[in-house]
Amino acid sequence: MNITKTVAALTSAVLLAGALSACGSSNEKNERTQQTEISFSWWGNDSRNQYTIEAIEKFEELHPEIKVNVSYSEWAGYETRNKVWMISDTECDVMQINYGWLDTYSADGKGYYDINELSDQVALDNFDDDVLNYGRRNGALNALPIAMNAQTVYINKTIYDSYGLAVPKTWDDLFAAAEKMSADGVYPLSAASKSMWLYLITYTEQATGKHILDENGGLNFTADDFEVMITFYKELVDKKVLPQIEYYERIKLDSEEYAGSVAWVSDANNYFGEAIEKGREIVAAPYTTISGSGEGEGWYAKPATMYAVSSNTEHPEEAGMLLDYLLNGSEMAEFQGVEKGIPLSRSAQETIKDEMQGLQYEASEKMNEITLSELDPTLENGDMIDDFFAAANEVLYDKATSHEAAEELGSKIAGYFNS
Image (cartoon, rainbow, N blue to C red; front, top):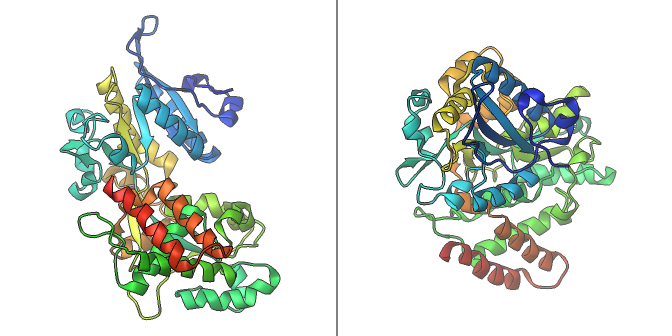
């Protein structure tokens, strides 16, 4: 059963089930308690859900005049429900959103509330202007980023050490590792579909010297470039550097059939928490390059996740108070730590300055050491990613040549930028 309850009434059973129903905006005050009801939604695993619920309970203690109803689930379920909420105008007053949703739901700046109007409630001076720019659309400040995110190469160094291998820095290093590990059924690296897609873009940009998009956000890759991308993916699969994405299973990181993974900074602990508990040494490896190319070339960064306020909220001031607490509040900062990356809020950073450590912090620091290009939200389009792997499978299973598959794929992907 999908359940949404007031945080104060949540039980451990509800925590396990999650709160998944529609949000809506309560436009009435509870007459008995004189509380204003607002709603808040997010996605995450059990650990994230737990600390977020505890943080909301603390917010209610600090603001007894406000009652917060919550709705949460894992990513896939949340993304699906968000589409319905936005279409039906039943989204929560405050919500966690994906960076790409700004263009999807608020290209004109009207899909979410303009947070500039909440400057009395939200301490915007905690953020640099370039950080605020990520959330601006058509002059409106539609969202605030929590932290920055980038695809990162995580390596189980314990496994690599057992084969006498150094942490890989180049693509050649990965192929060399596969030559040693494949006899034991171990892959040097792994990646889910979106991570694999972005990883292949990285290689292709390095190999061709071209960016996938031009400076205006238009498609810059041609069919020839996509042929490079498809051919390299086939080589990675054929030589057992990485598993084919259809056969990727995250649990194989725990069973150590995968010696590493490409994943977001924000997913570090989610992917490798069990290995760390077992005493394995997990490291954030250098960004993979072609030998001799510049570190960071072809890699992209974006806001990890963002918070927005509903354009339909009946209680913008209370929503603004919650938004400020989530981003700038010392209590929330202590609950969250660096679980979503290094917070961008200066006050949140100050609160947890003595706690910034561990794998996720290491990955965040590595991301901040060099300049990464900004990830255009269009490159995360799930249909486009599916089109790429469908074309690649045509080549993997000898249904088409790489040239034929790339020609058709190039036409399809061009359509995403011409619509």
